[in-house]
Figure 1 (cartoon, rainbow, N blue to C red):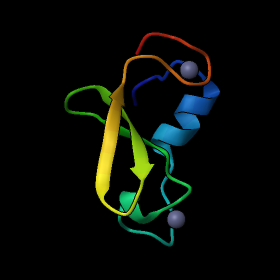
Figure 2 (cartoon, protein in one colour; figure 1 turned 135 degrees about the vertical axis):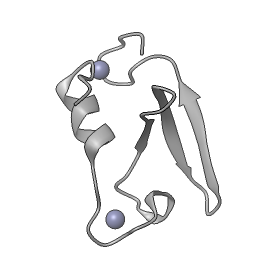
Figure 3 (spheres, rainbow, N blue to C red; figure 1 turned 45 degrees about the horizontal axis):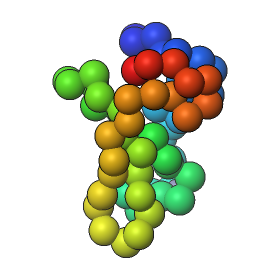
Length: 64
Ligand SMILES: [Zn+2]
Ligand SMILES: [Zn+2]
């Protein structure tokens, strides 16, 4: 399993909701991690499936 920069990121990147199958529908899911591209994204909960890709960790500030 990939190591993330800090505990917060590990928690959120691996977070799987048991209620919402679609990550974009879950208000608790805020970070999406694309294993293929090694890319982190911040989910925007505005009703459409959008996310912005982030280069720095919002918790510890590490470069991702
Ligand atoms: Zn971090
Ligand atoms: Zn949920």
